[in-house]
Length: 150
Image (cartoon, rainbow, N blue to C red):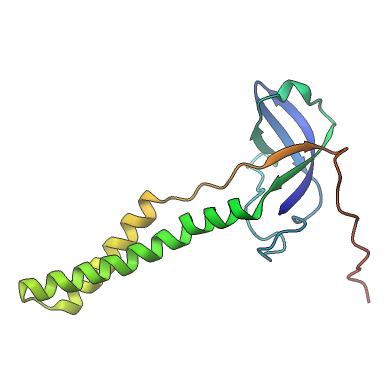
């Protein structure tokens, strides 16, 4: 489960503006070490999230954001798997069409590959899963005692 601590900076309607604490997620199986944009702040340096009970959170309150691994796998499939399927299906359809029409099958396969990938990526444009918001009083894993220092 990818988790990140945050602090409430602002509240507008059902949207919270959060300052992300720390430099990377904790407990993520993805292994990106904070290089992903899962909890990416906007141009204003604030991470915006919509919650049903935004009025229950006060500015300055610490929160924990989390996204379960299953939701991350589904997002990866939508982002990468569907585009790969479009690439393969487009190449097969293009090659078959080239052979059926008696034209250069490899050229048709290439055109089908490009068109299939483009269409699949266009229609499966990935959306990141919404994080679950918990108060900082929840149970958290203990802080790591590892150090980067020699």
